[in-house]
Amino acid sequence: MFQEKPIKVWSGYGPLALFLFFLLIVAPLIFFSTVVEQQSDFLTAVGIIAVILVILGSVLGLVGLFIVMPNQARVITLFGEYKGTVKEPGFFWANPFYYKPKVSLRVRTFETGNTTTTAKSTGNTGVTTEVSTKTRNPTKVNDLLGNPIEIAAVVVWQVRDTVEALFHIDNYEEFVHVQSESALRNMASKYPYDLPEDGGVSLRGSTTHVGEELRKELQDRLKQAGVEALEARISYLAYAPEIAAAMLQRQQATAILAARKIIVEGAVGMVEMALERLEAHNTVKLDEDRKAAMVSNLLVVLCGERAAQPILNTGTIHH
Image (cartoon, rainbow, N blue to C red):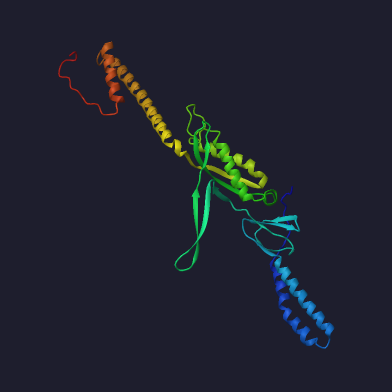
């Protein structure tokens, strides 16, 4: 198990100027070895060897130059041995035999279930262009109640430890995608799709809570890859097509019952208030039968779906 550590590297401007200077003096060396030293075969051979060494050394030295972009790191290894990591952006020079793979430290995001297909097409002009098509395939899973649902989540992540990302995991990007799908399936099976009657947690009604739990589970899975899960939230949630129509009818019925309950509670309260105020002000005295009739009429008016039609009584109050 390796731990990330910094490594000391040189600024690349000085070595660049030095190796370019060596390459510039190659022409005078060739001239000296072929023209001035023609009288001595030994000196000519030495000059040719010097030219070859200067060229090879300069080219090899230039190979040691590398650039680190912002939010990027270079993991330095020498013949399979980890030496350190360069995270500071700039232009540097190091041992030409160092292997320096890049690791992006940028914040990245993706949506589970998304697949991108790239196809090449050649038009009438003969120019070949690449066309990328993104397809959404939400994860199909059963919720806590066994209802099949389709769900997808957006995951925001970032590499924190370059050594773990490169050496502990074969392909850390693929690892993040696979673990995100697995964590989403596990989390979706813990909760019902809709809000239960006891007011508990549901996938549709508690998106913030569910997203935070998904992020924590992802963090536990991704820490071995040197990756931090910054955010996770549900981006798509729906019943599976085979039960979508039945569940829609159920939701409509539940909404109607809830609305009727509120209407009845409000109507009963208004009737009670009307009777109390009539008795308090002695506006009219009603016996039990007339109170029952009044309550019935008020409930019909207040709870009816259509506007009540007025009926005028042209007789006395008793007829």
